[in-house]
Structure formats: structure tokens, C-alpha cells
Length: 153
Image: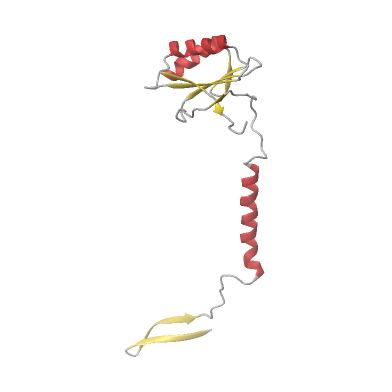
């Protein structure tokens, strides 16, 4: 280490030290190890949040349709399973509580939309019952969920 005095007009005002440069961004393999660790951690989080973790749900066999339509992402959803289970916005309910829950949702919305996801084995009477409850609760539009028809058949 060298110390050089800086002079101005014959007087020493301050001392400036000079240090040799030893800092490098990466020194071989050691510098790459933290980056590899970070890459493995990101990969681990991606794997844990993807298809490995199963989301619990009810299996529905939706009917097929040739047309494609839909509702926006904020639409309410009623799910009717073949076992007789009823879900409103992913919460299990009954026909008695369904009307009150629907009214609570439609109070704050200007143009509420309801999507009915019903298994293909659900009776027509049940669909009409849900439709009547929805119109009485204030839904402007009621849609039936379908899947796209397989044209390879």
C-alpha cells in the first residue's frame, strides 16, 4: 500500500491511499454455485405449484357443443354434480341456501352473470330449478357450461 501526499501550493491538504485491485466478479466455479442454487430453488417452486399438487374437486362430464361462447372471469358459477352435490362459487351449498347466496352476490353488481356447470346426467328439472332461482335472485344472464365438441369422432 502506498500513501501519496497531495500537495497544493506547498501544503499537504490530505492523504490519499491506493489499494491494489483484488476484487473480481467471479472466480471460477465458486462464483457459479450461488446461481445454480438459485436456479434449483426456482425450479423447485415451479414444480411444487404445478401439476404435482392436485386441486380437490368434483368430476364433471360436461356435454359437448359446437359453438364457443363464454362469460367474463368474474362470473358466478353453480356446479351440479351427478352425486347431487351443489357448489356456488366453489363452496358447497344446498338448494335452500342457494337463493340467499345468489342474492348476496347480485346486490353489488350491475350486470351479474351466472354460469351453470352441470354434469350431462343431471335432470332437466334440476337445471330449470337452478335457472329459476338465478333469475329470481337478479341474474341478467345465465349460461350453461359445455366443452368443445371433439371433431375427430
